[in-house]
Image (cartoon, rainbow, N blue to C red; front, side, top):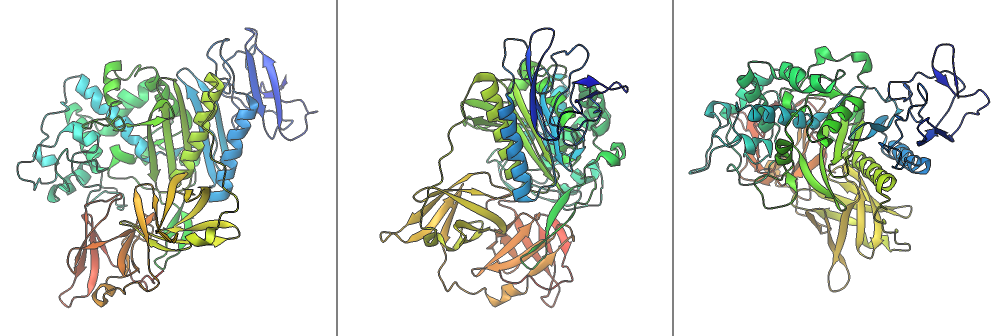
Length: 608
């Protein structure tokens, strides 16, 4: 390794292009393993941590006397192990496989401990320093801002909130809505707002967005159940504005992003360098059972605190390290501990204050994922192990694939640092009779169609292409854009005939060859509604109405009367769909969970 005249480190010209591993020793004697990929005999610019700036980023150079602060080194001192190149190669193989199998154009991955970056790489269209929309990871920063104000005595987690900020409470003798409930998604407020919600590109701003919900009502009693919401955290963010006299964005810059040195992050498009914002893509429902892929639109959500943050992997790593150090520079350790405790439940997992609390093997895991118009993301922390993984992708709704990469990276880190071996994945069962599982199925929320293609059980689950991998007997795992090895188990009758299957929490039953036809009055509502880039598509399956929302899945509608249907378990559970008709009974539009959309001038969706 030599230094060029420009002062950049480069590999000897005698090294052929390809994959190489090398080992260097710093003056401290620390053994540092460097994984090199696609090396070129040309100067490569390095950042302050010794990582190559470019695309892809797979190897680490040495800076100034070969200091041990190298981005692939897991160890904080000479007694700790480095990430072996074989483990890094495993991670990169999985990343490339996911991109190939699921059509993902670009991914950035960063691994960190509580002190420094251990590995960072950009793949495909993504660079290490690319700016992504991080979606609901924004909620973590919002929760930090709220809790800073709680520490300052300006906000109270358990005091009743002002009625003028909330939807109406229609439940007699219901408890008041509190800030704690908003942050842990147990307030009962709707998922979205009539104005400024996820399906609205008008960019009305935070205050107008929250104000639009005043004419709505709570969906469930406060504290009764967990219902994920973007409105709830947005109300909390507006309370920060009211308490500080600053805009939410200005407060974040001064008290969260600024102190962490997150200089590449922004809450508004005006502060985002467009040249570094990665180009993102999404599949859009075409209204006839198919999809088209297009560039994702870029606009500001009205629910800014819930999902509008733009950031880079390195900036998110600054945030992750502060959290792994007990909130250093942001919050008191006791405050962070409360945020990482599941709230208003006896369960050991669930939503804390902003954060999701779960288990990864024997480890507690603190995390949040994000999905917003062409971007899928994940930030995962193991607080006791002091390790973190950040994955950012430039493809809409590929959370299942992002989770697989995160899971692989966590296993790699645990093996490198503690020698922990991941639980063995069950070997696929060979020779299984897959044809017995073929057929049409339906659950409370979804439909499914399974078939066998060259030796593999595949299908669609409410519009999502899904692969089923046999494990043993009637047990499989399911993978799709949104599923990562989800457990599946088929059920049979006394004669051994397949009658249905479970997939996660959904229970599917096999549908007969002659399902009931859709009642004729319901055929009038079939079609597409709302924006071209994220239409609501009402279709028919097995004699039931379904609605495709957010270009994700078809949800089975439960009729209340001719114009009103209830949404099943899923993103909008317990909310309603109302078909809007003119005096002659012709459907002109739809009120979907308080968001009103006109009917699109397109052919009705065909039965699929």
